[in-house]
Amino acid sequence: MHISDANIRSPRYYIAHTQAQCAHCGQWNRVLALALPPNHEMVVDGRWQTAGANAFLFYIADLPRAVSRRLTGLSPGFRLASGEGQRNSYWANHCKNCGRMFSDDGLHCEPGGFMPTQGEEAEAIQLSHVRQGFSAIAAGYALDPEFFGLIKKR
Image (tube, rainbow, N blue to C red; front, side, top):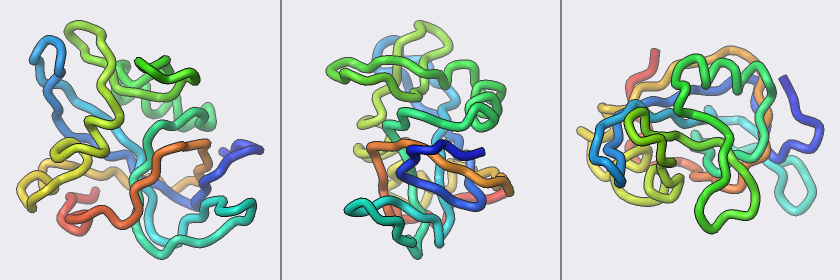
């Protein structure tokens, strides 16, 4: 399960899920994200480097087919789409009610979603451990997110 021009890789990964409110219609939705355990690798200045901490990925442009099938099976609203102001397509969550796209900035860069600001918010996120190799092309990367240790793993 590897992409030849990937900028992130790992021998295993997590699928994260939580609930988020659609900014357009107000409905609550199950949203997904990808996270990596310590010792995953990323390309920095053209070379693979090991990261010794957990990380969340976002603005994911490409995934192996097996990973994308797993994600769309868990949530048909997680699909490849073009975002507002984005020239390239990326994998994003979409509202089950109105079909509008959730902003990766909103889910990963603003408080709440996959960027908890307190323990209770972190406990609302669940991680499913996938023991398979992983690679991706991702423009967003949050290394060592605060409260990651409080997220429920299964």
